[in-house]
Each structure stands twice: as structure tokens, then as C-alpha cells.
Image (cartoon, rainbow, N blue to C red):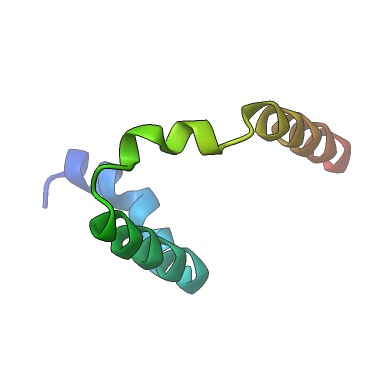
Length: 66
């Protein structure tokens, strides 16, 4: 395998050991295949303001730990 492909696959190898992520992703794929007309509206289901707030808090927390 060439080094460029190896660099691209590096983050995915860590996810292979994350069983919770794999289960949630499998449920997501199953539910999406059950209602294929719905994926275009998934972004409306996310509270982006809350995600931004939690991301900011995580960054602040990480800064305090260093």
C-alpha cells in the first residue's frame, strides 16, 4: 500500500476498535435504508448552536488540562 493511502486510512483504523461508534453507524445505515427519502432533512434535526457550545467547552477544557 502506498504511503498516501496509508495516511488516509489512519483515522479509520482507530474507529474499527470503537464498538459503540460501529453500532450507532450500523443503526444509522439501517434506518436510512428504511426511509431513503429522509437523509436530506437530517441536518435540521441537529441543534447546531448546542454543538458549537459543547465544542467550545471541550476546547476550553482541553486548554486547561495542557
